[in-house]
Image 1 (cartoon, helix red, strand yellow):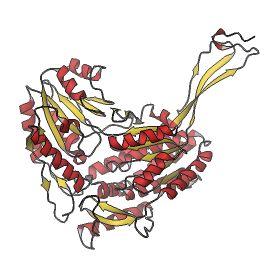
Image 2 (cartoon, one colour):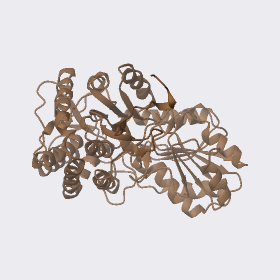
Image 3 (cartoon, one colour):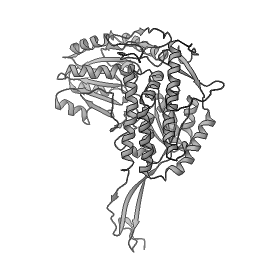
Image 4 (tube, rainbow, N blue to C red):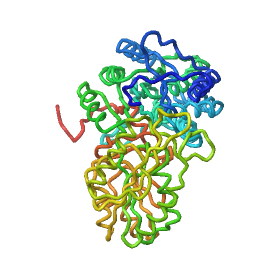
Length: 518
């Protein structure tokens, strides 16, 4: 089934019917309602089977406009709520997420195809960012600078920005929303969220928990709104002048379309786009450690993370040893139903993703590449419409166009190098710049890779893989990845507006720079 096919509806007693019942039960325990779709609507297709489990209503431009206007009105109240009180709402959201961690993770698995441990990890990431934001709610502040004029105080303040629009992708259906929302809320902003059309149930469940926290505290539900829709809904959010900040996660192509529209209306944008991530493996590397880091980064989430490892740049002296080890591990990776014990690789999001993966492998072969292991369609009982694949390990003679282009699937291209300068040049010779890593026990190599002449990515790691970032550090990348930063560090500044104040408490009126206007 391609994304444009009409999916079949699962019958009772089938795997699809089981998934539908499980999704509805999880939504009920969370307290989320699925509105009646009426005519048309969005089919909720599970990648586990390729079937549409049910249909949800699709918001058009009018519904999105109404949600944005309601959020703008709610902002007038929410911006004046003290920061620690706003933090209390986020704290309550974290408590509700903890209570319903298994329920929300089950929805993530059903809609995004993640194995259970990764789905639980995604919800834990939401809980962690709530903890972070609660602390942030009591520490947001400006600073006072020395004034050149006597009897004057020069200072900065940070004020709430307005409505924050969030457009998220299917591969992290809830965590990316929480990164933006938890921080935006404590900053005093309101949020309108357009989730991926592939994961509407996870979005309904997450927003229901936040709205419960808001209502319990006596605040309007419109502080946080979810709008379900496809391209039209996203375009409405991007174009609306009431949206002060548009945070969008997706493809490089999507970002190229979003940025000019938001900039043209004077808004701000925060973009998290593609990532063609690489790891360098040096002669001194601990290969046992490297194999563990490489396999999770490359095959985890079926290669469908923005931080997934796609290029492996290995010193010629260890490449044969490392490829041999990886071949053995790859050959034994369990592919199948992500809910089953022992499964490490679930499905691709749809048959279109599988077709793009197979086409990329054919292009790699045409460029002289050799598929060492994997890269085949895998049949799973009861799921003939799903797109399961075995992760592919491919040796390449050079970094060709297909290697420079991100394919959102579990393909790991292996390249070789002889000098660290050559490795860094290969590493940086792609348009994307999200995440990177080096495996080495040589402090000089590590520090060089971390330095200004090393990796040109926003995330640069030593002796760990490219994926699995903690929420305390700013997350984001450079070049065509978009340049945005979310989650930790000082990323909160993007969700607020800076104000410079000068206070004259003297009886004189001296001008700056000694100007005399007498």
